[in-house]
Image 1 (tube, rainbow, N blue to C red):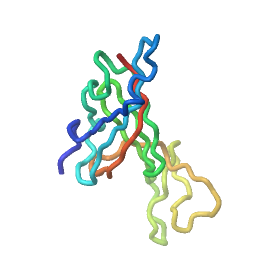
Image 2: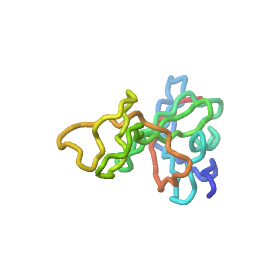
Image 3: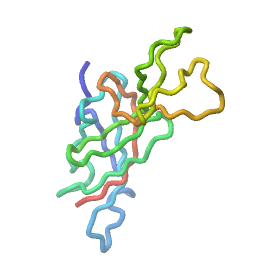
Length: 156
């Protein structure tokens, strides 16, 4: 399958959201809508490439992009300024080195402290919160569904 590219990302800025701090501001402040994903193209290594800064209403540089997290898909979005990409994170689950239990439910889950705990999900104790480990970057085999993210953009 093909990866998402910057050409697959649409950036739009409404007239009221473009450079809304104009008077006396040394920086351009805008609210952009960033849309991408179609459930077919895969998440590329290093994140979703973003279009050139001109698409964000900037001419010189992008100092900051703060994505508003959508409430409906469970992913966390972060801007990688070095590579001008949008990184997507998801909850990681790591199995420990424990052997499969006699009931055949699988290895125990390892938490962020690298300790294999009791949660096996099947037969797990009720009313407890489990630590399944840190967030991980979305695997490159995943095909993100269509999503639109609002983001505060600061730059020149």
